[in-house]
Image (cartoon, rainbow, N blue to C red; front, side):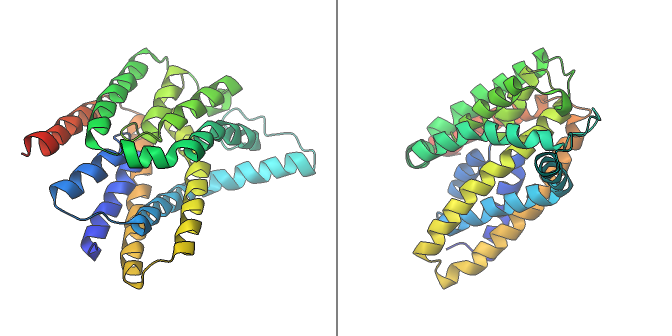
Length: 277
């Protein structure tokens, strides 16, 4: 069983790498192996994912209140959506976000167990880090970065939603692939990241709720509750920090640093698992 400080460290890694486009799975495979830590268990996995959900909700709570209230007013009171083109949290986003989540929900339902049991190994993760990192670099170089969220179309929503489905494969990175898709659709970097985080909220919520329900049915051993709590809190705090950092970083900087980091992480994984360095 993990100690409290191990849970805090792994929770921090999950929180940071869930939102920064460098792949959480690569870190959570390589680092525990390198440090000879035991598998953290299903309870811990659920804890850190629910922690990242809390980070998303806390960071974007005003956006979600605006999206839901605007949508409700439109449906119940027949009020038109806000026409202000600077508004990125209009109720008009609710249905597109739900639609864009469908591909990932289908892939998760059909293949989640297979992906988790068969593909969560370094020799699948390391190549994915490099391949999708280079794809991110291409998108960053070729994308015109001329549009914000208010200018998105259903074509954008569907393409980014399909991209999010790929994030279920270890090494891809949910934020990385959805930001990449947004850049290919000529969104500016900050807008692509912002929509990526809004889009990931329902998926993380749904997956976390199902996993938590299953976990509660099976029961959480009393000795794991403390580890659950430390991992949850750490992932929430560091997830919030990661979201804030990335949104502000991308307003002035390119994706190149993350691409370089992904390649270095892949090399590190090869060293850890093959060369035993």
